[in-house]
Length: 146
Image (cartoon, rainbow, N blue to C red; front, side, top):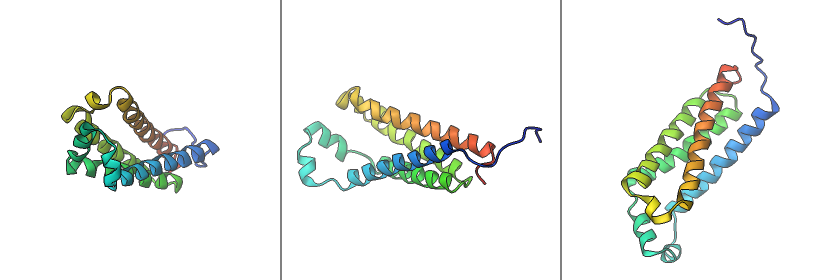
């Protein structure tokens, strides 16, 4: 055991990051729900290429999207509840994000359909997911999670 004394009381920044993580992941959940409940009218407004890409999404990639956002929401809730389960939930979310992006960018080449604008949001999502894994591990080491 180390001689370092750890403070088990989270800072205000912890609560801000936890709240922001929850809002971020709830937005992701809304995006998921919107993607699986798209109306025929909304589909008709897409280009033929977008319609083909959207309808060609494999079930496993849709499941990865669902897993990513639900694990992210749970991770955020566990973080705010100061539970160590936040760490594996954020890791699970990150793994699901990677799977989803493998489908979109490697197997089906979403870049050719959307260009750089279609890469920015997925890249941001990946960066935030990595940051939440790192952050949750750090606060667990600080003994802010139990």
